[in-house]
Amino acid sequence: MTSQPPPAADDTASGPAPRAPRRGLDRTGPFALGDKVQLADSKNRLHTITLKPGGQFHSHRGVLHHDQLIGAEDGTVVENSHGIRYQALRPLYADYMLAMPRGAAIIYPKDSAQILMWGDIFPGARVLEAGVGSGGLTTALLRAVGPGGSVHSIERREDFAEVARENVGTFFGLEEEALHPRWDLTVGDFQDVAPTLGTAAVDRVVLDMLAPWECVEAAADVLVSGGVFLTYVATVTQLSRTAEALRDHGEFTEPHAWESFVRPWHLEGLAVRPEHRMNAHTGFLLTARRTAHGTEALRRATRPAPGSRDEEELNHPDNEGFGGGSGEWTAQDVGERGVAPRKLKRALRDIRQGRDR
Image (cartoon, rainbow, N blue to C red; front, side, top):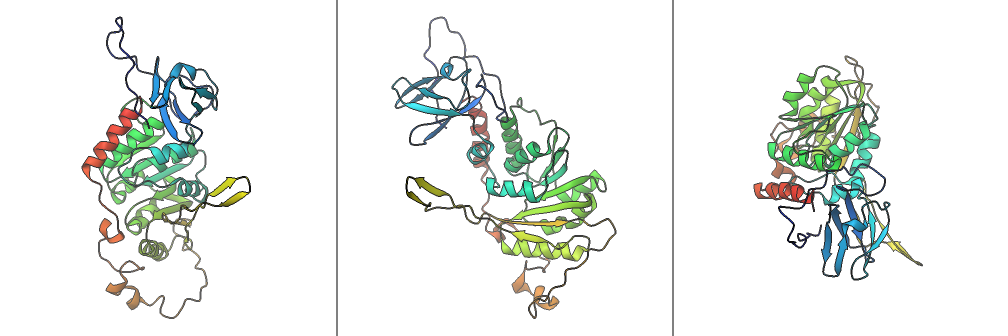
């Protein structure tokens, strides 16, 4: 985002310029005061502004007045004072997710899309999410469940929860400190909070955390019969251990796991080829279905390699994480770097400043 200097002072002005109303990105129609607008020049360089009364967008190549956009159709083309043309569009959810200030790492759009599909997040669903991070996936879940559904997010860290609250509020245009009407946000541990919701209280459980296998028992209790358990993990060791925990529980169907890669293409005349960079491994997704409460899952007949299910081998200290072991994991075990407090403060500052930028 490009910062904009305040408008030039005049003799009759007193105090700061009036603040535009807060409006969410989840809407269509002509641009209005308070809308965020993404400006793209001929080289697809992007700038995001918030429309304000008498506002101006300044760059080294001229000035664009916000009044040129207010009331214009989404997708219009405007010129600044030096004749530079911009395509003006309302940012999409994917644009917002990739650009939003963050403390914890986000789940990227390619994975969020698959979570919504393979997690079967439907309008009216009751979703229990744990590991809210910076609020990117929470925003997608709230859009998917619609007015009749609900999302309950559990986050262990208060500072992460604050960043998520601000990001979700900005997307939906909520007033400061307001919480989305279909969203509950709780600071605590999944194993402590989930049992308070009651048995068979949610339709879907979505986990993004360090040790999801520790939450299998609590998730089984809170899920309805036939509900979906879905987790996002970064490493093979986490994936294996979670899959074995689901099997050991006995009332989940055979887990299914995958990863996805997105390779963009260069399109210019006959020069059609893959881009040099691609979105490769970000994480693994794993799903399983909850059987009817009290009903043992039907086990899939398999022919594993010799030794692959050997208890002594699984629980050997050298194979910690691959289905066995009892040690407590830390973020460093899976290569996660800690989030410095100053990064979280900077994210909150950027969110709050960006509302009016």
